[in-house]
Image (cartoon, rainbow, N blue to C red; front, side, top):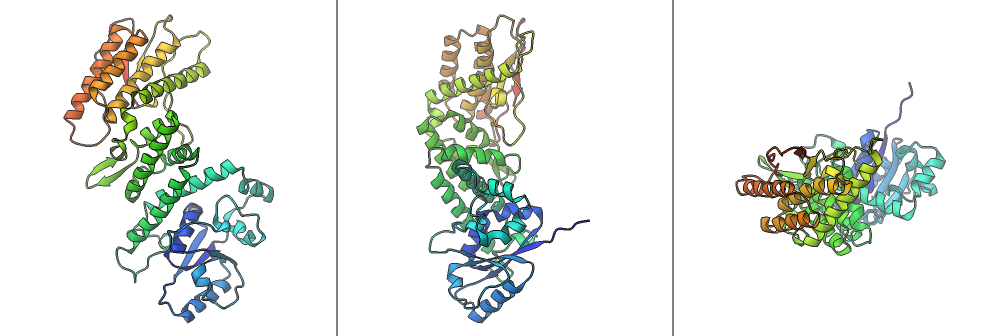
Length: 431
């Protein structure tokens, strides 16, 4: 039976170098359990002979594939480097930033000096590897955002109680008890700073939302990352509102009802941190959101319409991490009904999505009077029946009462409306 040798990476430097290493994607590669990190902390007071001895030991160790060293430490070392790929990580006064090409997850891997790194970080054939490591410019940006977001989520779980030594390279037993948390916050700040800079690009906000969406099936308790994600999401809303990117706003809206941090015995959802954003009071946004959801539902219906042309109920929400959660019945609540054959697909989709939009407006702090006016106007413009209008207005009142008597911040679940009269059988579906 073929066995794969466990490879090791050696790091000589300070917390800044460690932060750069983490942000470069080590947290993802260590999942294979084939990568181990040995870290030697260097401070200003560390004797030069101690640094030199550790340097030589790492260089001569057969299991060390790559040796990373901060620029400041490199200047203090005079011994030649042999036996391992040497990578210099720049350092300075600012927060840790990743500029090391060997550890960028998407670029620089074609360089000759990184061949050893490629040998233990990937096992794909050379042609496939070169194609994967040199993607088009936009794919490079997307992979970088994915790596940063994954690092944020990974770091959110690292703490003093982490029992795996190879995920705690920045704190040892001789360090203060709060060193782990302080270091974690520093690196989280570095990662979110770079993400925030990327948000200023034309597609930056959408790229971040999609990367965040891919994390929702992996981890929802974001712990220490909560304030960082809250700040980034507010920036996303600013950018998307200015660019009228309704799809990205709706995705961010639903993700904000998925991610949370635990405070005592309660969950504080990300939604609470973004409810004051002005986009939720923008009626034009909600009209565009309704139109978008109707278009998406109609497109989904067209793809799955049966041969006898029956009107189908909305499809279930997507279940994979790569699907956008914004279509059909994926809003918090949708109204469904078995429409008569003469009912147009447009009206079926409109009624189905109107319930979700109205519920979302209430969830994100739009005043009930404004929500009533919105629903009333839509019902009048599209000539919805008196019964449908009554049901949705009753739903608004039910949610309003639930909000007034709610003792926690958990997302609301609406009560079922009363049974309708034939021929329509209207029900509320909880998404």
